[in-house]
Length: 452
Image (cartoon, rainbow, N blue to C red; front, side, top):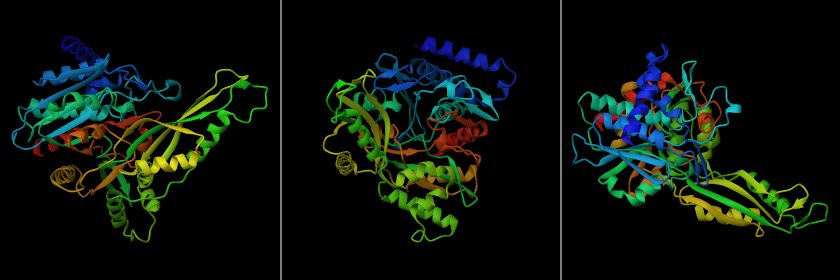
């Protein structure tokens, strides 16, 4: 595997160096572009292109830094990479720094560029995974290269991991590694990963969001049953009609606002910047004051239930006896059972609910040494910009690590231009990241790992 990885690295770096424009790219962008060029699309339900080539590429880069990476492949081509980096003070608890190598699929017909070409245009790197999350993977590798290449060590031991299968819940990635090789994370108490550390603008002032928690995950299937018959008959017990009514009712449900400790603190910080009383301004209004970041934040103030897939029938003139719908539900931590009961009440007793995948919600401390270190490092690189805690509306591989008692945070530092709709980049069309944001992230991550 290592031999194939080295060939892969050589090929990609040579290709980059062969064009005049490429020579000006920071190494972080080069690595991210290389990773984007590996189509690691994960379609879910066990269908995926696999992460093997991307994992071999990462393995070769880690080995070139003098590390001893290990590859894990519980299913063919579903490959994760883990390595331990010795720190100057091994008596301190280890820190897990992790990313994932898979991406959601992309339909090239809807994109302005080839989603797997890693094109550089308008000062940005375009492609599937540019923000979710091959940018962070690249920052990790580049920051480690800066540290180890200079003959230095991080302050504490690091467990660096590049997982497979995050986009389908981690069953062939982080969850499998945690369950089968917990010894890899021995001594680790905290972790940092994706969907935090990026900048937002509030009241004309730049600030950063540190992800200190994430909502619970409930992927469910609604099943409606009826009478199979010829399409010309009068059939009132129609599975598709029953399912459609249930999906519409659930999809239109307005879940009530419920603040957690994290969201209450975030809204207080936003109100402080705006100079308003958080008791006099609604949570949604405060969230909207963050601009495009509200695309994430408003969803953290309540449960969400979004229909994502419908399946029924096989011929135009045949009424099917079964119809199914997939619903993506994200609840606040600890509210899973109450929400499931409410969902059953909304869709009615005739609709069966099957749980496809379920995972925990998390809320880590919004204070402490790691949080202080993040704030101090960002202050050095962007003086005067405050750091706010926030609850992620989605989920990360931190869920799996939490089973080992590891507190997870989202910190993939990016200083972004005010007009960029960053939340829209996640799983969206024309996903892209500014090149200078990648350089910023590399520098911030390097300093954090050196000093924390």
